[in-house]
Amino acid sequence: MRQILLAALVLLVPLPAFAQEADGTTFVVPYSKRHLAAYINRGNAFKNKGDFDKALANYNKAIRLDPTLAVAYCNRGITWKLIGDYGKAMADYDKAIQLDRTFVGPSLKREPISSV
Image (tube, rainbow, N blue to C red; front, side, top):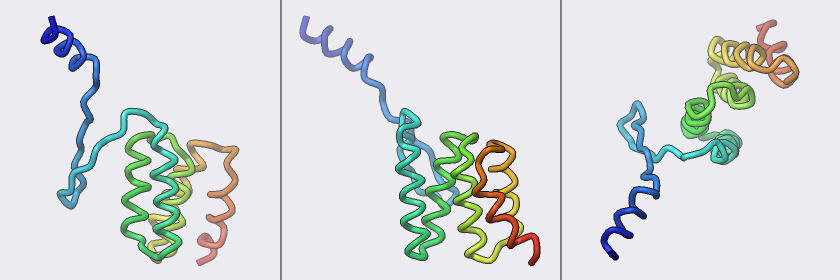
């Protein structure tokens, strides 16, 4: 009886999903979108420290979990702008605007690039 109960419990507990980054590192894919804020916040922290590669990696994870998240595209665009890749920054700002026309952040950040 104990073995049947244990087997039933194992079937009810979801196992983590794993994914692989382009650089070959493996990470656990969260079960829910509640982890999105953590990826955005980590991306912001890395961006503020000047660690742009890690910032981009975190924004990319957030976008992979929810490709409709305008703030992730906007923040990634800011990071691309800081790196100096204005084309990628504009593409991310445009995507953020496309996803959420009420989100003014990308529009404001896009203006200075348009004049470059």
